Length: 110
Image (cartoon, rainbow, N blue to C red; front, side, top):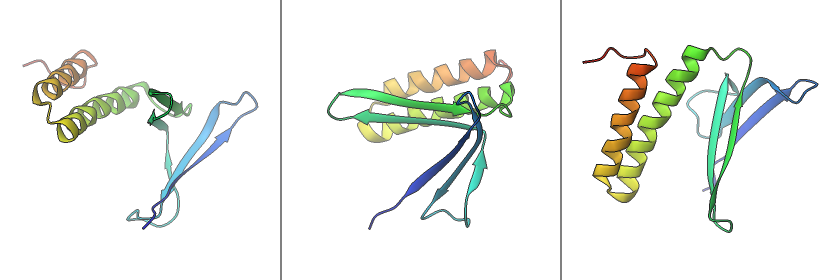
């Protein structure tokens, strides 16, 4: 069974994103949902390289971008551990995420 995720990007005259939306065939909500930042990472099998798509709208607040990065770091740590069993490396990323959160003012130092 095939699933789809679609992204809809409106650009201004300078090709800067003004509106980002997404939908998925198996989402638990109908239709499109708006977002203000989008980060996609693809492993290109032939190039053996990571390809990136990073977009955000002018509505994306700096504080929200910091939170978005923090969540991405935590997600990368969890994915690395699940995919490879590399507990030590995953812990390093998780620790970095927490240090990032403290320095970004998202968490209080312990």
